[in-house]
Length: 154
Image (cartoon, rainbow, N blue to C red):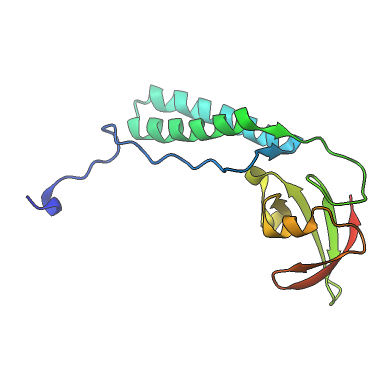
């Protein structure tokens, strides 16, 4: 029989959802990043209880999958304490750059789960962070769209 005439499962009959992929990189986190992971785990536990009470199997499956991911991220988290030394950029540093046209950029180097490029937070495994880590004020780095000089590392 053609598959066109067979009812597709809606996921509520036990079809497994694809697991969320866990990064192969070390799970370095700032204190803020660890707090975000812990909050995510707690939120998902509450959501799971509510979905079970409502007997919503599809939501239970989705939340269980998400909870497995975030629980693993919590289990493997390596807290990196902030270092106040501003000599060279490292994990947790806030780096201020200036472009040749005078525009300033600020990037904080953070863990993968807390990265928010639009908010100035970049993952330590990103190409830009790779160029920043180990660099100091006065160094020039190449960005995808041109060069920039490091003004300050905090």
